[in-house]
Length: 195
Image (cartoon, rainbow, N blue to C red; front, side):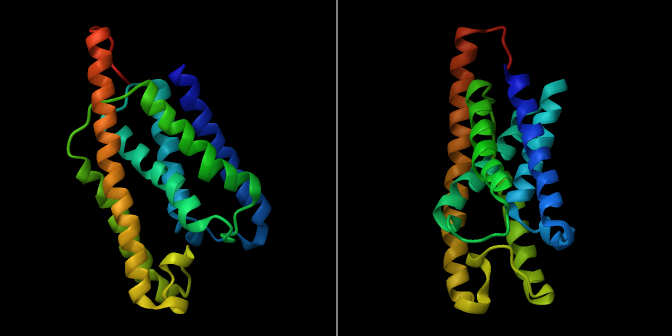
């Protein structure tokens, strides 16, 4: 079951990315495309899922992937729904909704014990630092809530703090849920290891 779920995640992300490239045509800009947290979190989820099809992946790495994609799944309806982020409908639905749900389901079905969830925060911190540093140089920001041109850096800071609170809280929820479910599962099935 988990192998099928993980292969589905990989194939869905792949199909959404190919669809995006084809639909955007000449408007597709690889550097800007990789500037979206949505795209990066989906790529991480897809790679981790594909690895998990063929061999066990550490719970720590899986937990990080769950955090990033769950963040995408939560931030989109909270801050981006109804805003044009130049994502065609199919890709939008797959990357913001379907894949986040499937990855979280995989975590619940095959949970893992994790430690130090705070280490997962390095990637989102690096992402926002890069985004805010590159924005004025490229004159491009991936999301309106990190774009200071219309709202100023004060509002961007508030927006980033809101997202940071969500990510920090979510990191501990992902770790706690995974660890508790893995402990419960091993108590019932002592010879089964989560993948």
